[in-house]
Length: 57
Image (tube, rainbow, N blue to C red; front, side):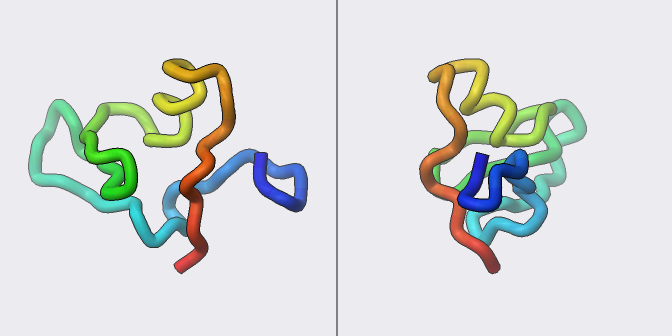
């Protein structure tokens, strides 16, 4: 969660990007990966923590 207590919205993050890969259409430049899921969900699943690299656009 971010400072406001809301779930992180990757679409509002400067590190989020859209790819041409149909199997992994979303990516995160801060963590350096592409995924079918929204990156913040992947980070939460992998680490158990909310994304620590969120940076508003």
